[in-house]
Image (cartoon, rainbow, N blue to C red):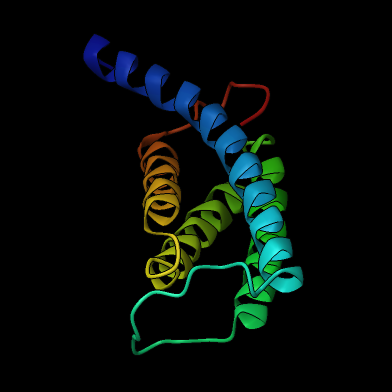
Length: 136
């Protein structure tokens, strides 16, 4: 392995651990966002009409379930298992779609979560674990 590739893999491996932390954090934040939408759906700002409009209670449940799945997948990512890496990429992609659909309600929040999900996908997809690593 060349030195440039070795450095890139070191950065990617470190970023995967960061991605796991990001996933747990994003999952918890989505849980809280879901709780807010379920319990206080009158408080949310309603933007212009759009094609994929759901009731805020439905959005709340979507964010609750997605948040729990993202957080659990982030915890599993700490193991470095192949199934956890694949699951994390799929779940982060689903989170991107859900937050894209949430854009009319809270655009800056959605853009932030989408950006964090992109970092997670990049880190996991560029990392090639060394079989000699204890946690890979």
